[in-house]
Length: 192
Image (cartoon, rainbow, N blue to C red; front, side, top):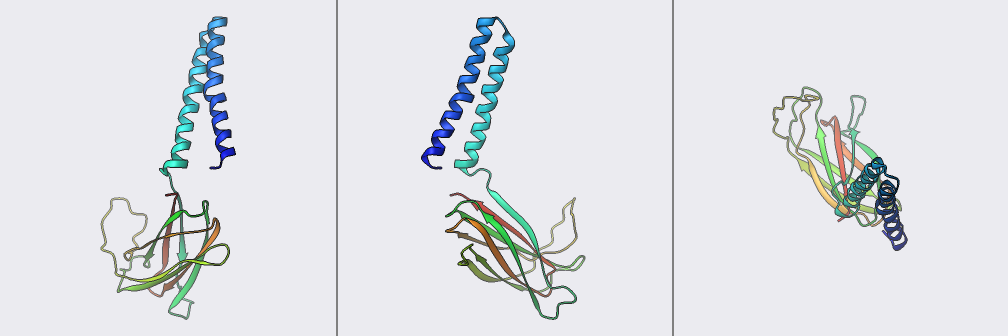
């Protein structure tokens, strides 16, 4: 946040969070209308709470931005042993730290058999590679949950962290091998 934005935030807080409630409180005393006191207190408390939540989001990184999607793996018509899928996602702040989690998912009602190798790259808007890697993943142990949306088994997730020097639309490219039906993608953008 630069200086002009900070000045704007302070002035807005002073006017809406302090001056408007104080004016309503004064008018309530002057005109003998207690409802104005109530409205002044409601406006002051509500605006202060909204300001605190916004400040927590901006400075404390309590609510990080999370991008979630699925990338399709090779299907029955694909002749090769793997398929290359990509997805675009937005980076809101240059220099932010990103946590990337790629979880391969098997076909419905089939177990995750044998290890699979996932290859990934992340490109910045200028075309620079900001993250690249590959990892061989073993099948994950199935765990029972009372509510399960699908019965597909998964492999252990690939987890990595990287920082992006640019903001804007980034591109994630993943090579998905044959036994994998799709890959669940979660990218969390943290400010610190």
